Length: 570
Image (cartoon, rainbow, N blue to C red; front, side):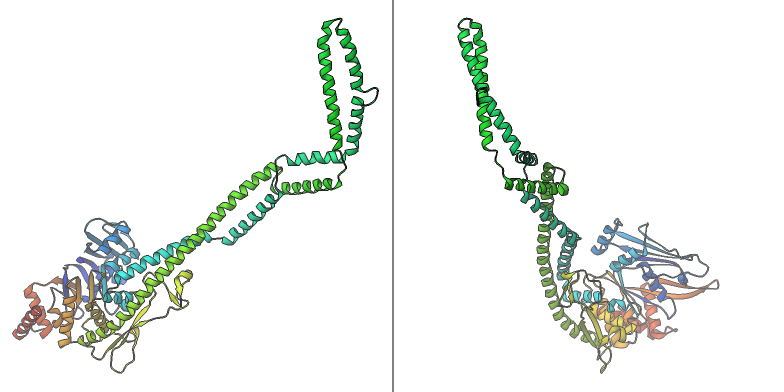
């Protein structure tokens, strides 16, 4: 709620201060007195566009200060998220300088106009000739329809579902980024592992094969050598075993003469046994010395395979086996990531289905609410002086090129999933009988727009909106009984929030909880616009002025008093 406004050096305003309260605050004054400047100051306080043309002549800067309470939950949450949390009051200071370098302060801390503009959407909504975008914007129209139908809880649920889909989609895109390269790497690893595994390598295998090849290549030489060895050891008269046997027989006879020869006999006897064993081993070895060209070819082929694998994966069998282990681990990791992608895809599919189901439920509820809103708005607009007007809520198709596509989960059947659901709507109006329904931008004047907003708010669309609503030109083109209806609607709307209204009609001003007037005076040769809060007597006088003109007659005062008493009764 806006509590206090201080304006300095803004066009005709030199130094102005006003305090506002809960309820209906009505601002009156003669045409040209400066009511629009007061409205401009409020717009600046919530991030409206500034211009150096607004700075008072001969001043270096214009200053607008506004004090808001921050009991509203949305406002407090915004301040906490942006690091401006503190007291229960928010002081906004906006400075417009001649050098074009304006400044914004929130509770004394330097901020930006962009942040102020976002904050302003939580603090105040201004409806008037220059605020048509409020009704023309599809998202704003959706908020109004949802407020009327009491669908805000469903919208929040859809928003949560949408964020879950968006988060899963982002995670999936991160996981699958460069997936073509990952898939190629996975296939290469599988090929390399299969190649190594098919080889069935064994440590020391290459040395064993080379040794076997050496034997096969030298069968003849080995056979000759073995045969010669066997002959020397056991064959022929000069065989070592025969000669050693004869020597042992002789020494045994001699050992009977000298026992010291016994130890020598033991040594020679053992040597004879070993020589005989060596001869048997040579004989057995010779049995396996056979020419085998097929085996030699197998060994050559195997050695060639090992040589090729060593050139690809390492300089030795051991290095290749180590590489096999590393490839296995890397492939396992990639397969884990593949499983994670599959799991995330499953989660995304489930979350997407849930989000679309909730969005379509919301869409059906909006469709039903739109029909009711159309009927109620026609009745409300007739009461506000727009008899014969027709109002419609149109559901729009999403243009194919309206936004950059974020991915399949957000598009379905030509509709786009958003935090607010899958609907886009627009308000259409036929202000006069016999005229076609057209978008508001083509048919609504400033006064009609204000009355449209008032009608919507009176029907309960303001749920969850800013705590302060400002209506400008709501009285354009009306009077008499219709003006009184407008006053009653504003009074009802102000029961649960702060409403500020600028009006020229006494029928509306009579319903004010707090009355203000703006006057223009000349002091020291310069025009000054001033504003003040009216006492009960001053309020009566102002109402009489609005009824009777410059001369305040007793009849005008009596009529003004009757209007005030009638407004209180109603």
